[in-house]
Image 1 (cartoon, rainbow, N blue to C red):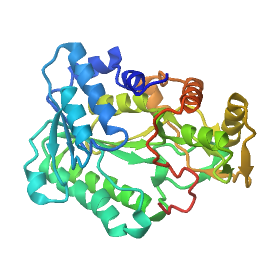
Image 2 (cartoon, rainbow, N blue to C red):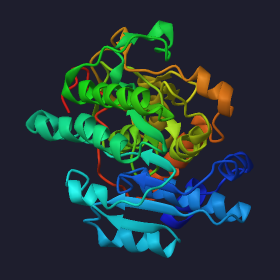
Image 3 (cartoon, helix red, strand yellow):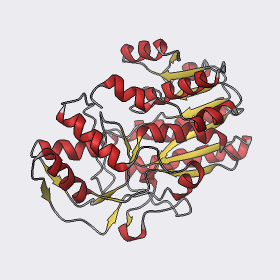
Image 4 (tube, one colour):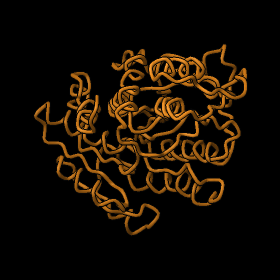
Amino acid sequence: MDSVFELEQTLTEPSHELAHDLANVEGDIMIIGVGGKMGPTLAKLAKNAIDYTGLSKKVIGVSRFSNTVLKNDLEFNGIETVVADLLNEDDLQQLPDVKNIIFMAGNKFGTTENQHFTWAMNSYLPGRIAEKFKNSRIVSFSTVNVYPLMPVKLGGPTEEDVPEPIGDYAQSCLGRERIFDYFSHKYKIPMLHFRLSYAVDLRYGVLLEIAKAVKNKQPIRMEMGHVCVIWQGDANERALRSLTLCDTPSRILNITGPETVSVRWLAEWFGEKLGEEPILEGKEEDTALLGNAAKSQELFGYPKVSLLQMMNWTVEWVMADGVTYEKATHFQERKGAF
């Protein structure tokens, strides 16, 4: 794995299961907020799965598209694009009526200095989306940040655990779910809240951050001593397949890998592979931000890309100075200040 081309091929190769599920989902698919870190490969994965089945469904990506390179790339790959500022009511109302919505729009980083914008994007906008697409089914990206820090020994919260979000970002994400829930009840909109924990793409993610810190002899804080991660291709496939699971009232699904992974173990493993001694500061707390994804693994099976495969690919990428997004996950944040 040593080029963006090979990486994107891997991320966007559809499985037979995904192709089968999309063949049984009526209507086109629109990805609202396609311009984020996961959106472009999710759109390409959807298009590849549709092409694999020989269907004629459209995949439509909606974003501000300040990056015209991304817009051109999506269109080159057969994805229709719509330029829209989603907080502009005229732009919102001009979106085409589409049967299947993947809602990825939101704001996280910079929340501490701009709380009003985060709440508008994460809690106000979902209500407008639900009013506009009351005849659609909606998979809404959410986050395990809606859960409290939990004892590591318990293995992470399940969908039945009560949310206790810390900080404006996490609170506004729970707000997103609650607003969508209201309209799901009001209009009988089939929905699913996709509570994700740390997708991994070699250009960003927890594994990359730890490996780069080891290579560059930078300290790694240990208070958040455990994490859960999943290959972005697996997460995107689960998001698309979740269109078959939408229901009213809304369903909730935790999405991450099966392991609760020690940050210390990751750092030491990367250190051995990279020939560097990791610099570890602080001590692991008894609690961490985790998610128990046993339910999603029962529904979809275990992720196709294992943790060890992700780690090996990450080492190769770092050693080859592969392209990175330089967008930190802030996975070590314990007080919800993003």
